[in-house]
Amino acid sequence: MENTLGKQVLGIHVMDPFGLGPASSTFASILKKEPFLARYFRALLNSLEIKEAKKRGLRIIVGGPGAWQFRYRPKFVEEYGIDCMIEGEAEKIIGKIVRVALKDEALPQYYEVGIREAPSLEEIPDITRPSVNGLVELGRGCCRGCEFCNVTLRPLRWYPYEKILREIDVNMEIGHGTCLHADDVMLYGSKNAIPNDEKLIKLHELVVEKCDGMGWSHCSLASVAAKPKLFSKIAEIILQKQPWWGVEIGIETGSPELAKKLCRRKPTPLRLRNCLKLYAKVWI
Image (tube, rainbow, N blue to C red; front, side, top):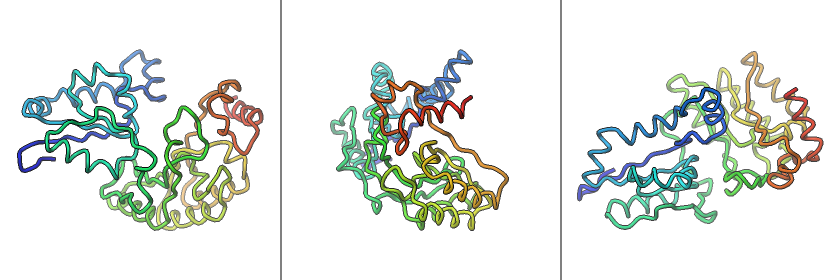
């Protein structure tokens, strides 16, 4: 972005800029190599175009789910001239920060978006271009309150069916499939950790009617175990169009002590002990 005075701002969205996420760090440890995401993020900032623009006063703002990682890389931030890092949902504040940058005024080095600055449903815009792998967000936030996860710091909001279907249309324009994304897809439309039968069934009926197939990004075994009959019903709906589908089950720890300290509500509505036994059965 450039203003009439010639000042330029580059915004970069990051998912896992230093490869500290669980998948990147796991595979990097096994292969004894630097994570690809870390290598290519550094290559981007080392590109001739960005280096030349920095000499002319380019200001770099980074944000996205991986912005927290910059807290642990202060030397990298200084070396590559990153001017501002934004952690959290930035729809309501990004315009203000970019305007400050374009005026060449002082920027906060690290801006953590507060809960009062989080956008309402009406303030979250639809995607205008296809997403990676056809990922379609169902909502934001989480009701489980795990202490290590910043998703739980955001208010819980579920998108209306119409918004979800519009974003699916954007992806279908280029032939993308559909992957429904939430911290726990089984909880779509719920106000707590108990799945909402009516909303979840209607969502999948609408999506199956529109698409040739779908996937899920994440769900928890606790939600499945809370309503196994509902899960079976959803499976029947999805399998009308495809032979199978996959989903990532997040298992942060198998330690009862760590779970008690950091994620007591992760297994809700199950008892912690019973949920850990269920996890163990899945892996064994």
